[in-house]
Length: 381
Image (cartoon, rainbow, N blue to C red; front, side, top):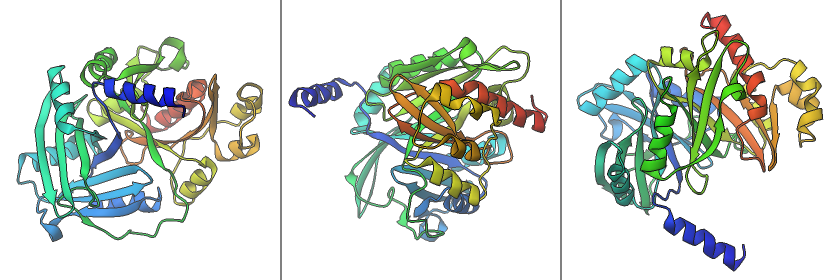
C-alpha cells in the first residue's frame, strides 16, 4: 500500500462516525444448545471453544461458543428462566423456533458507538457496561434492530479470554478436520415486512453510518410466481454487510412471506459464510448430512457462455450444484443449504469470492425457483 493510499485509508477510518472491526458473533436462541453445538461441530466443522452453564455458575442458561476462522456462533438455551433475559430467550424459542437473537458487532469503543447510535435514533437495550475476569475487561452495550433482533456492541480490546467473562475454555465436541470448512462471516440477511425495507435501510444509514452497497428491485428478484426486494447496507470497510429483504406483491407466496409466517415476524433469514475452497466445503458438509438446494442441470448447460471460466470446472459445479455469478469486478461461487431446523426459516449460504463483491444477482432466478420447489413440497407456495 502506498503512503498516500495508506494515509487516505486511515483518514477515512478516523472520519467514520461508527467505526467497526467486524462481526463479533452470531448469537442463536435454541431449544437445546448442547445438541445444536453438536450439529454445528459435526455438520459445519466448527470448533467448540468456550462454554457457560451450571457447572461454572450460570444457573439460568447454557451457552456454547463455536468458531471457524473469525466466524463465531454462540448457541444459548434456557435451563430455567429466573430473570427477564431468561424469560425473553424462552419466549423467543417458543414463538420463533431456533433463530438469531443477536448480530453482535465488534467495535473499537462500545461507549462511543452506543452514544452515537442512540443520539441518531436507535433504541437502547443495554447502556454500556463492563464484564471482568482474570483475562481482562470487555465493554458491552446493545441496541435494537428489526423484530426482536439486537446488535450487541463489543469492545474486547482489553480482553484475551476464550469469549467473554463468565465463559470457560472448552474442548472440541469432535476434533475438526485440519482444513476449515469456512473462514469468516460474509454477510447476514434480514427479512422484514412489506413496506419496511427502506425504513430499516435508513436506520442503518443514520444510526450506524452504514452506506448503501447494492439494490435489487423489480425483475432483479422475481420468478413467474413470487418476488422480493432487497437492499444491502455495509460499514465503510465492507467488513459488516447486512442485506435487508422485503416481500413484493406477486401471484403466490414468496420465500420472505413464508419466513415471516413461520418465524412469526421479521428476523435473520440466512448467514453467508466465506470459504476459500467451496468444493471441499460442500463435499465435507454433504458427507456430514447437510442438505443443499437442488439446481436443475439446465442451469449449467449455458453457464460457461455468460459466466466465463472459473477455477472450478463446469462439470464439477454441476455435480455439486454450485452457482456462479460474474460482475465487472470478478466472479463468485455460492450455494445455499435448506433450512437447518424444522421450521422453514434460518438457512446458510457458502460463498467463495474472486474479486466480486456482489450477492449473486445472476443466480436469483435459478435460486428462487429452487426455493419455490421446496416451498411447494412443504405446501407453502
